[in-house]
Image (cartoon, rainbow, N blue to C red; front, top):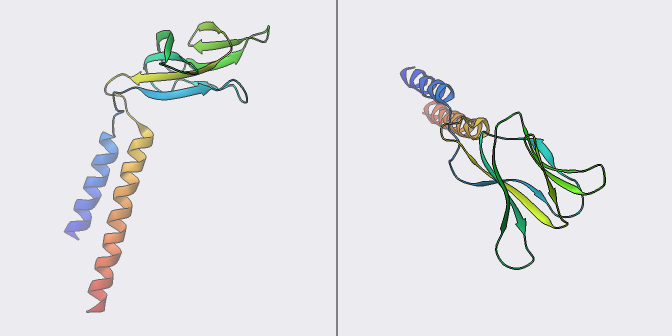
Amino acid sequence: MTRSIASFIVIISMLASGCTMQHKEQMVSNYSGRGNIPLQEAPFKGDYVLYRLPQQGNYITVFRGRIDPPDRVGFQKATDGSLDAIAGKTNVPLEDGYYTWKGTPDRGQFDAKYTAVQVGTVVIVVVVAAVLIAGTVLAF
């Protein structure tokens, strides 16, 4: 009984505290020159950089700025058919090519997906352990 109460307290404390986002650059959106043109709400508060992907060589920085949700980040077709990069309220006209948005979250932001994975893993481990222990106890 004491162990189940302790397990419950550990799981509740993990849910209450949550997990924060890693403070490193991560890919947010790509445009490959064809297909869907992705435009989404910014997944986190932070600094975003738009890179052009050359055929050979290094990435070229096209735009750098701060975006806070619920502002949008991504790409969209302009009324004249050309491509624009969207960074909040800023539109950046683009030449034909391949582009990617990368962002670095501000420190201390709650990451709901990562927290859900961590809590789910703990719950599964606790349930499996409880079933194994119960099976062992019942076998004797």
